Image (cartoon, rainbow, N blue to C red; front, side, top):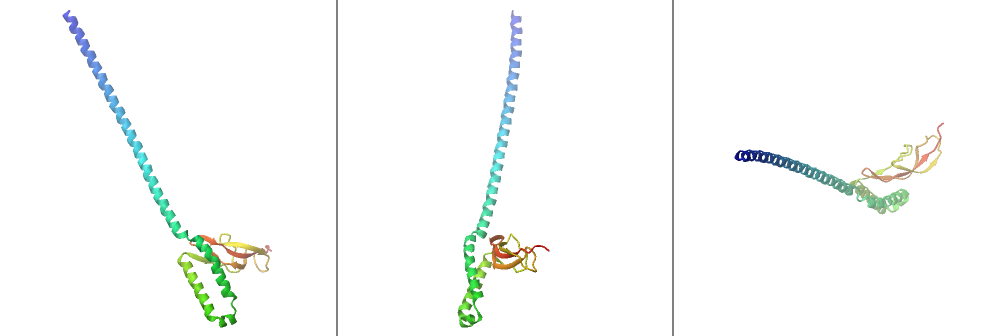
Length: 187
């Protein structure tokens, strides 16, 4: 009987060793699973970080662009409101006859100086004048057609009269030049 117990004992040891091997394999599998989970979590955090970094960079670029645009074009409303002042001063200077210029030389000179100062301020702030000439081609990007009329010796689309000058603020149109355009049909 002692031999039977020894054999059972050996069987028990073998089964216990097999059980231990299985437990160790399960532990190894659990460690591998945990490691894979940690790697997946790390990759997810890295992806989130990279996206947040990209969002921050995009926000910085957008705010820089918005700041530059506000700097350049922030005064466009004021600039638009100043255009009639320019128009009225120009009309006043053009309306003055030679007799009036002689009689009111100081006044006319003061208006001319004010006009030069206004033009200097315009150029300092990026405002340029669009001054089309009679005979130039009509450009709908910078001109506004006030009327069309057939005029001999002109081609259709030629400017035949300039009613008001236009203005640009850097690369943006503040006000188109107001012109009359020839509608003479092609011969």
